[in-house]
Length: 157
Image 1 (cartoon, rainbow, N blue to C red):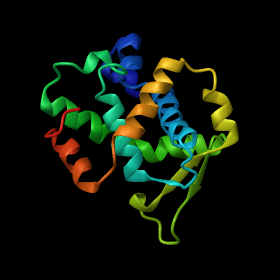
Image 2: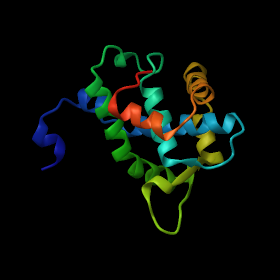
Image 3: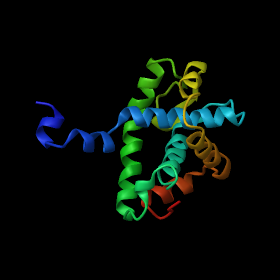
């Protein structure tokens, strides 16, 4: 018996809230935005969590986010942070990203960047969406304290 059988959730609802393919594309769009801006260094795991969260809270990218309770925002961030290692592993396995980690494996020390194959995949994405991701990367600056505020739902974009 799989997870879907136990919950009896319609497929459309499941895809809306648990769409790992969509999450992977969002990660690639985010990493591509860094590359577009000339940032060739590897991006830290927690930076990805931060920028992905900011993008997810952006009503132009995610119109369904408006008027969400604080707890829903916190849950969204925690869910993504929990799933991110698996998503990165899938993208790495498909040669869409490069992964760099310290000898002693710590999730927070993982660093990634998009490969040319990954950039080829997102080149045909809607320019308006790509522009929104690039603007977020330009306008927002990652700090650990900002991520903590987002996790608590104290900082709503």
